[in-house]
Image 1 (cartoon, rainbow, N blue to C red):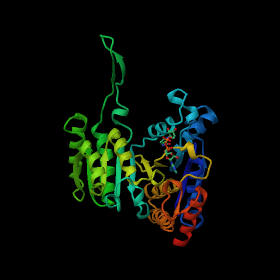
Image 2 (cartoon, helix red, strand yellow):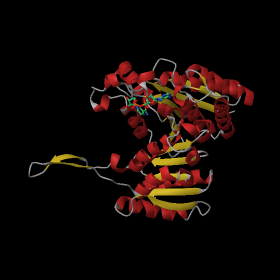
Image 3 (cartoon, helix red, strand yellow):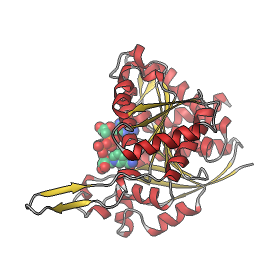
Image 4 (cartoon, protein in one colour):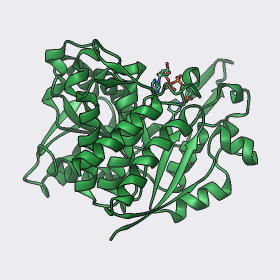
Length: 362
Ligand code: NAD
């Protein structure tokens, strides 16, 4: 039986409430004899700062390095916004990505039939939507050097950043994308701005070359401005999209809003060996923290991604996703996904309903 050694980083705000529900799901599955699991918790973000003066304490990082995978809640605490940038809670997530070399960010964007009305787009444009966005996470203009703000000879200030990608970095994320497309609809759309930016011209060339090794995947290319438009016009045309760090940052947020419910979307950030950090895409939601109002489903679905991508436990991942679909079909809803004739529940009750649905489906 597989043994899962997990680091659990609840973080701030609603983080502890939502991770507790995902942990309950994993524990219940272990009780069902599906796998063995060891869970160790550590503070991160504002909680890390309060515990030991840094958003990513050494002991937390060491735990993450030792673990097979990391379940992450959310970080962010407006009360700490006065701190220097390197001590703010959000730095923890950047530090983890860097220290663990988590270069591939996977964001599935799908619409559950019960929630099609929650999107700001017409239900017929989004219903049935099921796409995967792959964003490169450790390179590009966010990390390129040199960068800064300098003073010109005439005294005017000038800001500058460097967009840079090595062939090996492009190929690495490209392979993850082609492999992911193979497991889905076998269509991959690579997003760039090759008509204007040299870096992304190289991106297109590398993706095209790589495509020759994946003849079973239909590769297409699209400029980022058109991609932003197509996501709103006809998002169902996409199966898997792959892009760099900055374009991916923007497009993945745009795409997540097609579903209309930030509390439903999971994500994974993987290294070259599929070790990963799994987290909901939303933040720490301080406005509803501690009130049993947060939707735990994005975190529970992140645990499903963990079983699939880090442990190859596909059937168990599917079981969680089936359980989530069941509670939605049964009409249960937290405030963020409230709709006509739904049964409003809190965080704990939603988590318990998923655990119960798991029992029925097993
Ligand atoms: P947010 O995602 O925390 O909240 C935006 C809105 O969505 C709020 O109204 C919130 O109540 C609601 N919401 C979010 N998650 C929800 C859930 N699971 N269920 C129900 N409603 C939910 O974004 P924000 O308010 O801009 O940021 C709050 C803090 O989170 C900030 O400190 C920010 O830096 C941080 N943040 C952290 C991460 C992360 O940990 N990866 C990501 C984004 C923002």
